[in-house]
Each structure stands twice: as C-alpha cells, then as structure tokens.
Amino acid sequence: MNQNTITVTSPLLPNLDEFHDVLRDIWESKWITNNGSFHKRLESALCEYLKVPYISLFTNGTLPLLTALQALKITGEVITTPFSFVATTHSIWWNNCKPVFVDIDPSTGNIDPDRIEAAITPRTSAIMPVHVYGQPCDTGRIQKIADKYGLKVIYDAAHAFGVDVNGESILNAGDLSTLSFHATKVFNTIEGGAMVMHDAEMKKRIDYLKNFGFAGETEVVGPGINSKMDEVRSAYGLLNLKQVDAAIEARHQVAIRYREALHNVPGITFFKDMPGVRHNYSYFPIFVDSEKYGMTRDELYFKLKEKGILGRRYFYPLISSFSTYRGLLSATPENLPQAQKMADSVICLPMHHDLSQDDIERVIDLTLN
Ligand SMILES: Cc1ncc(COP(=O)(O)O)c(C=O)c1O
Image (cartoon, rainbow, N blue to C red; front, side):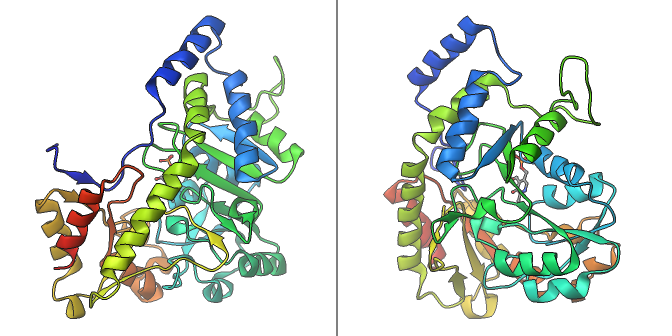
C-alpha cells in the first residue's frame, strides 16, 4: 500500500512496551487460555467501562450471535435488518432459523419499528436488530412489540461499543447484546467479541456454552462450542481499554470537521448526533444523491480510490441480495426500498483515531467535488 493511502480505519494498538511486559507475565504464568487472570480482569474492566452487569468474552463477534440464539433456544423465524454485515443474518441461518427482513428507518439506518409487527407470524420467536454504525435502535418501541408478542430480542451491537443513551449503556437493552472487538472496531482485541447479559444465571449458561458445554471437569450440560478468548488478547484488550476514550474523542473531532466541511454540499447528507446519545463515531457514512451531487455514489467511490482514499460501501450489497437469502419472500427489493436506497448511496469515509489533519482535508477536498 502506498504511504499516501488513507484507509477507512486503522487499528487502535496498545503501547508495545507495555504489551511486552504483559506478555512476559503471561509467559511466566504459563496460563495462556481457559478463563485465566487477564480474561477475568478484562471481563470486570469491561463491565465497569460499559456500565453493564455481566459480560462474557468471545473469540470474535460472530460466535456470540450464534451462541445467543442457542442460549435462548430460538426457533422458527427471526425478524432482522438487511442493512448490516452478513454475520448478523448468517447467525440466524446457522441456527436453522429463517431470517425475515424488515425495512429500515432512513433517519437512523436501523430496523424500522413501524414495520416489525406486519412481519410477525406464529413462527416468529425473536427480533435481531443491529445498532448500525453505532446508532442506537429505538429499543423502547422494539421491546414493547417483543413483549406484546412474547418475542426475545438479541441486539447485534457489534458497532455500539461505549454508546450510551441518557447515560445508560445501549448494551443493556433487549435480552442479550453482542459486541465485536475485531481490529476494525473502536475497541479491538485483534479478533474478539463479547456478549452482555442481565443476570448471573445467563452468564453461567453462556460461559458453559462457549466452553463446549463443560460445567465441571467431567460434566457437560449442553451442546457447547469453543469460542473462548485467550490470555494474550485479553491482556491486549486491557491495555487498549485505557486509551479507548481518547480514541473516541479523536474520532469525534474528525466527525466535527467532516460535518463542518460537508454540510452545504448539494447531494451529500450524513447523520447528526442524536440528542442524549454518547456516540462512538465508529463510522462516518455519507449518502450521495447523484442528481444533486452530479456524480453517482460509485463514481465518487472510485474517484476517491484512485486518489488513494479507501472509503468503504458499508453496507452494500444488502444482505438480502446475497444468493443464500435472495429467494426469501422478505428479501424482495419491494419490501426493502429504504434499505436498498441506503445501500446504493452510502460511502463510509475514512474514520479513525489516527487520521491527521492533512488526511482529513484531503478526504474533504476530493469529496467537495
Ligand atoms: C454488524 C456486525 N455484526 C457482526 C460482526 C461480526 O464480528 P466479527 O468480525 O468480530 O466476527 C460484524 C463485524 O464486522 C459486524 O459489523
């Protein structure tokens, strides 16, 4: 990659000397995985940072989705959004359930609560919304619908690390929430993830499930999987947690500058901060109206790319248009006009803690057209 290339994201890396020190501790202890001391410490540090009662670490952000559906014994149909990363829908499919796509609310990019009830059938057992780009879903309305029909709610909160609404973590909504700590995320453990739950019983159950179902040396209480996080990545996560607030603030400053520079450009729109929300600025999506902008989304995307600015068309194509899912009744484009429009117009501009002022201005200059 050319040194002038500006990537859409850049990993938050711990201080290397500090990482060497913790590696030495791990080497000396010879305890490298299986609920070691760094794993325990990261779980409690995350509970405190995220203001959640219980958390269970995972080896990536896909396995907690799979495990959440298992833990809640979800069967039949699961209502979800097509405007996400494929792992959301794949987790439903891997549990032998049928995803039912519901269109999004264009003001947030999230599943439109007004459209959920029409998609409920006697076979529906859960709703799996996504806080896309870390934008909080309307959790109150979704919960009301779930309560009315006796449905479980599992939030894919892969993008929503540290997002609060009126001082409360968005991760406390629903029955379970899952996080991704992939290298591209606001907080990363290289690969990694977690599940947030409300009570100790569920935490115990999830901890069994992520460790083959073992409840003791010789007792297996269920058909578990192996999705434990190891000690090296737990220690790396503990170091990264110390700098995540500064990283979020750096991202905030990038968002402020992008918004200031782009707010008057005809045909370019973006989300504003929502009242009462602590955002994490995990992405900076812009939406291109080609008629007003004078260039299509793809023309802009390739123009940026040619100049070494690697935006991403997240989330395009829609999950519902991939071959596995496109045959589903709910996957028809007529059912998903808002999601289709967003997928066809979005570019996520470079957004991370380490963007220089020059980089930001280069992105802006080229986007100004
Ligand atoms: C919305 C969403 N869900 C799930 C995942 C899966 O996370 P992981 O890559 O950590 O398995 C991602 C990853 O990018 C994601 O964006």
